Amino acid sequence: IALKGGECAVEVEESIDEAAGIALLGEAGIHIIPNYLTPEECDELIALFVPMPVENAGEWEGRMCIPDWPKHLVDRMTTGRAMLAEELFDKAFVLDHPHLLRWRIGDHKETHRDWGVDNEFPWRSHVGIIYLNDDYEGGYLTIPADDLALRVDRGTLVIFEGGDREHGVTPVTKGDRWTSPCWFAEEGKWATRLERYNPNGAENSGTTYNVN
Image (cartoon, rainbow, N blue to C red; front, top):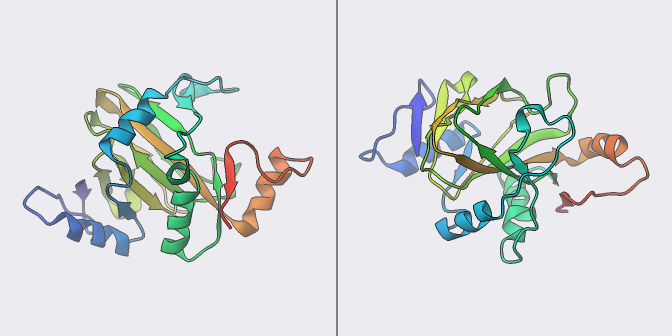
């Protein structure tokens, strides 16, 4: 784990207890779960990546994939991380849009909230990101309110309130950065998503899972 920042997170070197840094972030509502996946499982997921067509893809062109999750990983890639989020935040969640994402040299994400620029995703209150590799440079997760820039080891899951908490990603400067993000919707807000994308009353699309 590498942290840069001010009051919330000091620079963490190898000589500093990593558990202390994780505990400090947890108190701030940024939850770090190391070894959520093994290195071999991370490599297996990266190998599944085939870019999918995305309507009006923009910055996501050629970078997104929703694979058929391997049977031995499907729970951890879907409902498993939603259940962890429920334990951490003591809320009932529905899982939204788990996928694979490739970050190439120069790719970045400006500071944003997961609600969307015009509140187009009001159900996305929390986010869970699995980091599938760490052999790249740049690509820090930034959380300005906490004066924080964060990098973690491969296989780590990071969960926080991505709706209310502004965050971004600094440009990747070397190598490819691979992640698997998803969002968690509070049950009371999930109806908004269903009304918009499932007007015929279907409870779930192929990429959403109710964990309750």
